[in-house]
Length: 98
Image 1 (tube, rainbow, N blue to C red):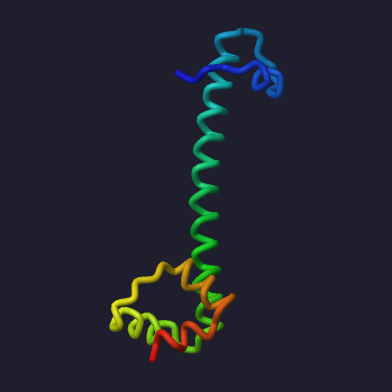
Image 2: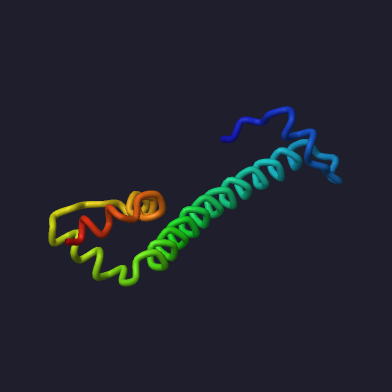
C-alpha cells in the first residue's frame, strides 16, 4: 500500500465525489508515475552509454581493435572510464596499445 502525502492529493484534480475512488485513482497514478520514472532512468542510462560509445568511436579510429589490444595487454577499463581517458588524456590510449 502506498502512503498518501498531502501535496500529492492537492496536485490531482478529481471529478468523482467518492473518497474511496479518489484514493484508488491516486494510487493508480502514483504507480504509473513510478513505472514511467523507472523507464526514464533506463532510457537515460542507455542514451549515456550510446553517447560514450559514439564518442569513443569518433576519437579512436577503430574501437574494437583498441578494445582487443587493451584486453590482450590485460588492461581492464570500463567504457565510461575509457571515454573519459580518451577525452582528457588521449596520449595514454596510444601508449596503452603499444
